[in-house]
Length: 360
Image (cartoon, rainbow, N blue to C red; front, side, top):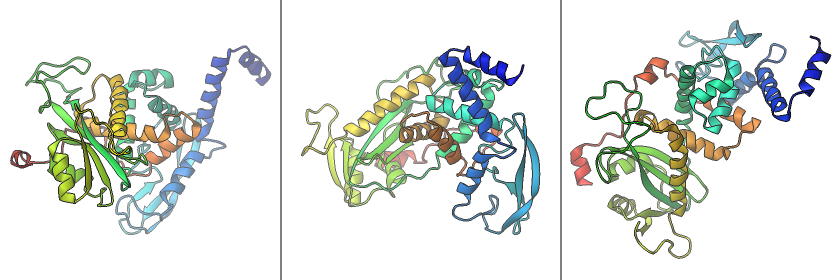
């Protein structure tokens, strides 16, 4: 079949099929054009904006050290290798990134598109093709372990802060002995807030700078609160929270102007501008988005919080710019987790003793 015949067959396709074909061709050509990799070039340039350094010893004393050949899709490409003159270790532009040692680099942009859409691993594997959902599981968490490292900027002006709770989950763990296994998320056997619940703190200013992070099991306490948010708040901020006493004692200790709102009270807004409606709306969006996963293992909860924060900054838009931007950003922070380390990881909340909990 020659090119003219192919064009004729393409013209017979319906609009949806033509769009899918166009998307496939764009993804196939994105990584390798005439043996070059524009996406990899952009990653290398972004990583070296503040000076080129060794990913092993972090010293800026590296030199080019030959090239190596690899295959991406059906293309053969040549990549640069480097050597550090201090530690004598070699590395590439992809060392300590989610893309390191990947054999299917041509599949990553389509996978990022599925992540922005929030598709399940099995649906993503079906859409991408020639890859298993197990592989995509590790791809997902390597990307999220990088996005989790994006620093939160300091807050300005009015800061709304409130906690929300997720049921503690050991999803994926075999041989759970202390309780009956739950199905599709399940529910707690205990009423109200207990150590069956994982506390997530969300703080958000009016410029949409957002912190969302796991504090641990059970009720929020001042000690944990300070470890998470202490460096982001200043005396110039105005804090709006619910009426839980940990917030009150923390604001008093930090000498921050503070407005409290009772969950069952009639006063929702003070002086026309002070409220916690923005952070509560964030809670609602987060919970709705998390529901699609039918329960998330608590050891991975920080990853999913980082995922949602990043998607919020993108506006959940699947534009080519956002897809490439998410992949490039995930390569700017060191990722050293192996598949085995991810699989055997455990839930590690902030360490606070029971006595400290009682004292706060």
